[in-house]
Amino acid sequence: MSEKDTISMQLVREALLQSCPAGEPDAGLLARAGIDVGQLHLPAARVSAESYARLWRLLARRCNDEFFAMDPRGLRSGSLAFMCRASMGQPNVGAGLDTALSFLSLMLEDLQPSLVRQEGLAEIVINEPRDEPRRAFTYFTFWMIVHGVACWLAGRRIPILAIDLRCAEPPFCDDYRVMFSENLQFGRPRTRMIIAADCLSLTPRRTTQDLQRFLAEAPGNILVKYRDPDSLARRIRHDLRLCDPAAWPDAERLALALCMSASTLRRRLAEEGQTYQGLKDSVRRELAISWLADTGLGLAEVAERLGFADNSSFYKAFRKWFGCNPGHYRTLILQGDSPA
Image 1: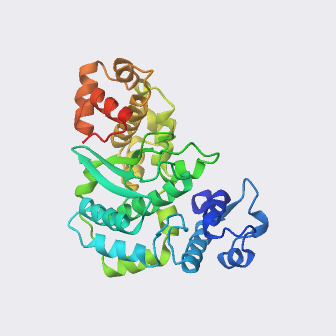
Image 2: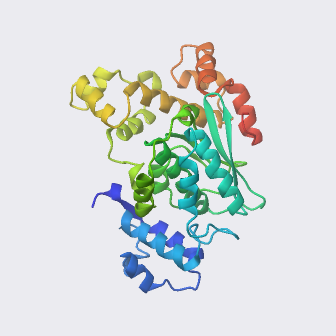
Image 3: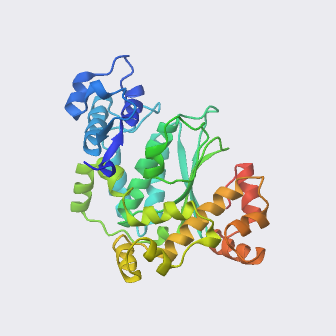
């Protein structure tokens, strides 16, 4: 079993925290899920995504809640099915996502999500009536459901540019970064997921049979299908993030470093639904958002770090990406507002 198909035991412990709060873990329930209770507190232990999905379904039936009893109202059993069925009938992914978020707003008390659009940028923003932030696992479980449904509607992974969270950074984040994005920002004024808006115009092409198959495998398919730590695209994205954008190699030099031809590189990325230029653009957008959140960096320095020849080129690219200039975006994110 590869690490791609496994989930950290830390997430199992988090799932049990409110759904089985009686003190000692329910060994019988864990055994039914295929999880060894003796490994529950081993720091490096991992379980199969299938076992985690089975645990999720067992806990949902026990609590009549598909959200691990982390909200006063919760998501009654059948909520995911209803949300997918309602969303798949919409004309595009954006409308489907709006439908899903409206349903979640009706069902949940503490997390009130909405979709905010602005040209090249889209945000799923969570408004919270409580002053105290929720724990990271609560937010990431919410993102797992929402992002998983959106990816299923689109028929492919929707890249996440950044996730801001109100809570402090937890001791464990490795699986979250693999599942969602390397660009996780904690202690922010509000919780939101930032994605490129172009995915919202995609047309869902899902059938009743697709829905039945998706629900039969959920949430294990969400946890694994739309992430791939071993993919070539993720390896390239990781390497690009570690390198000065001005020094990023062209496709020929990258292929040589990977011991393959440029045509093989293009073919393998195409098989994953990616292009090298698309990966560079995506990483550059992620870095722009991350560095603009750092008030110690001037806009000219951000432009230079991103490999732009001058501020004008950076401003033009940023407006194309997100529909506003970088200074305006920085002001809004520091105020905790949406750039809309």
